[in-house]
Length: 63
Image 1 (cartoon, one colour):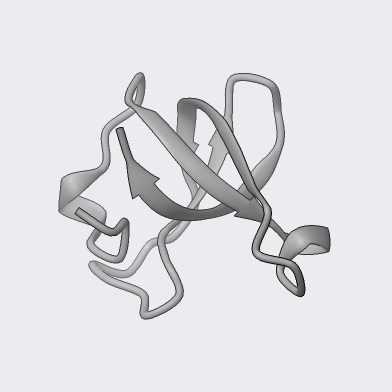
Image 2 (tube, rainbow, N blue to C red; image 1 turned 60 degrees about the horizontal axis):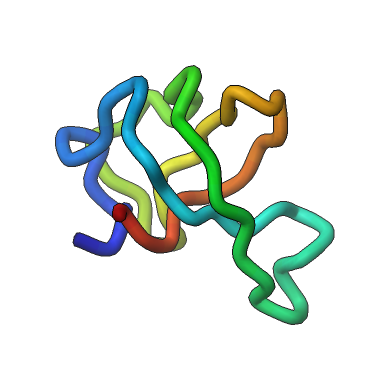
């Protein structure tokens, strides 16, 4: 699962996201999903989520 489909992501899941400031490097940040911010059913660059740590980014991997 690559994080491009909203149905695959649930609050409480462990994921790796790329933060806005890390998009150029592709550096991933691990965390637990707090909120799903993308309203559409899919997004080619990953579903945007807020982690428990309050960081916001697009899901690249689901653990």
